[in-house]
Amino acid sequence: MTDIGADAQLARWAEAQHGLVTRAQVRAVGISDEGWWHRLATERWVAITHRVARRPGAPRTVAQRLLAAALDVGPSSYLSHGSALAHWGVNGFDVEPIDLIVVRGGRETATKLATVHRPCHLPDPFGTVLDGVPVVRPALALLQVAHGLHPLRLKRVLDQMWAKRLLSGPSMRRELGPLMHRGRPGTAALRRLLDSLPEHYVPPATGLEGRFDEILERAGLPTMRRQVDLGDDEHWSGRVDFRDRELPLVVEIDSERYHSALSAVEDDAAREAKLVAAGFSVLRLTDHDVWRRPAWTAQEVQRVRLSLGHARRPAA
Image (cartoon, rainbow, N blue to C red; front, side, top):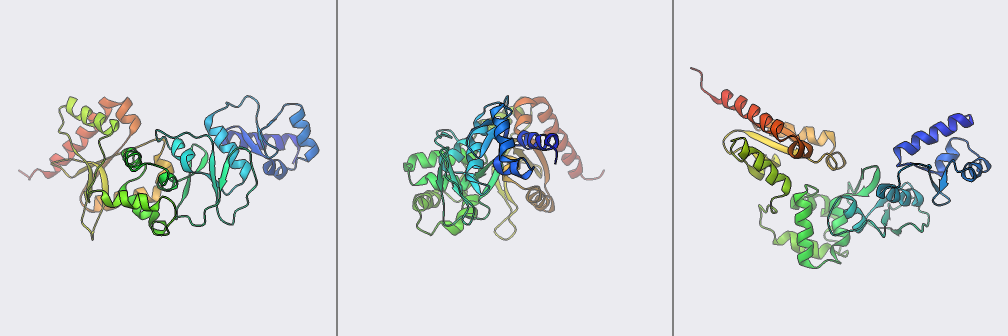
């Protein structure tokens, strides 16, 4: 590959990596050590560590610092513990000092950018990518910090994450089941908390849910039941955000930031298919719709309600 072609490829990688490239990527495009040092000396790239460099002019963001640490450790590293919770938007936690885990069997190199943990057991799935940064899923991050939290604070954090739709009691039991009886730090506290919750526990309403209720009320539409389990033990269709009190209508509100990182397209399709098979119509909205397009949101709810109302009317 020519120098021009190599630099163009590095630029493409950097664009997808918050302005960063790694020495492994530099070598992959055929740039020699001498050629790389020349690029650093002429400030075509700026070294963060001897394994990670930043493109001059790339915005210096929190996500860039997090990704730099992960890239410096190696391809099997994920943001974890309180750093992961902060990246997921959980109040009361800071991304720095940065914590990372390295998957067992993965290559690890020492770094001054983060504290590195090597867990013996991980759930499946345990990680994802949020804003371009590899990160453990919310349930695992909460388990990682649970042993250091007062029970009342742990409950508040759980409620906050549940309200943000990052997890729920059932999802935690499903994701962390293999770890909950291994005696690791945090499992006892988290298990006691989950066991103390009523069977159909629903956390306090979020600002998003309150906003959706407000939109319905202002439009003269009936409010809906929130956080409703549909189906029974044998044919459970899932917990939905809102259900119409009169019509077979379900409204799901997805976070534009978190949804793609937490739910696969196939999972969404399967969940929606179960709801449709159970006789429900599903209206999917985003948090952007609810906060920024209230009139359009009300119109969409009214449109679907009218269509279902007409469908239920007996023929004349």
